[in-house]
Amino acid sequence: MNLRGLSPAPVTAFKKNGDIDFDANVRIAKWLASFKDVTSLVILGHAGEGTFLTEGERLDLIRAYADAVNIPIIAGITGEGTKVAAEEARKCKDAGATGALVYPNHGWLRFGFQKGAPQDRYKAIWEASGLQEILFQYPDATKATYDLDTQLEIAAQPGVVATKNGVRNMKRWYVEIPQLKAAQPDLQILSCHDEWLLPTMFDVDGLLVGYGNIAPELLIDLIKAGKAQDYPSARAIFERLLPVTRAVYHRGSHMEGTVALKLGLVKRGVLDHATIREPLKNLGAAAEAEIFAAFDAAGIGRVENLMAAE
Image 1 (cartoon, one colour):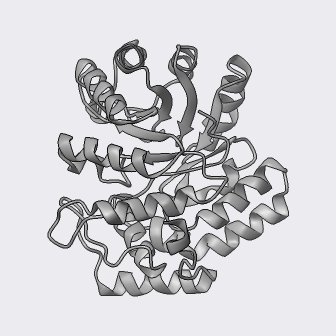
Image 2 (image 1 turned 135 degrees about the vertical axis):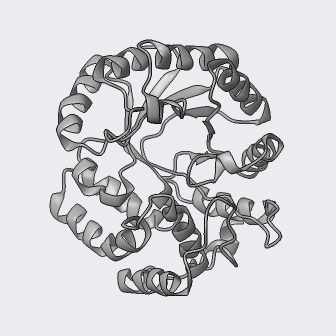
């Protein structure tokens, strides 16, 4: 997969009764894929409420996306056990996925991981499914963040084509990213620092972000500025986006960002409503007004080419 561009992580649209709204999800997919610099769509992750869907819903959503667009569909693989994750990946491949964003075993968030276990997880998923894998680096504040040796060993495995890095510790970023590049020159470096992208933009091949749902046009420009090492232009885009960044991502919990993304899509006319699934909670009228005002402040209006994309 060539991921040297923007890889949005779309939300999952629901009907007001809580069922998946496949028509709305296809509309999102086609709109995002209409941008030539959108290189893949990454579904079933945090922004997509992937762990809140049944297995059947997840596979049906992959099929809908794969039928709708002609760019790679990357599925979030979240199963806890290594065998469970490998079987999940195989089913996702059969449903039409091209890639796997490999989440850590979420027990590791609290308890940490044993040496070698992450490497075995990636190996098992590749051998069971043949899905091209993205190494997912969790924040430094969690116990599921991988030390440099673990990252290097995963990056060297067959099938691993990129890393989605969200370490959120710039001391580690400035040390570890150059070493990953030196060891694996073909490994594609993708940032997922939605809440403060600017510091990472000058070292990456692309972005893999939920933010790609709501402002793909500006994020594509930000990637181009970063690759050109054009700091003034990148800074100007960052500053323009800052009201939206604050309203969507500088919230009490990062999980609130998923709800805010849906409200952003309502503001842009891509969704009719922002229905979510438990355990997510609505943000309330004041937050909705704040998010809508942030889009106005950033000059991000309704999508005019939505019907053309369909």
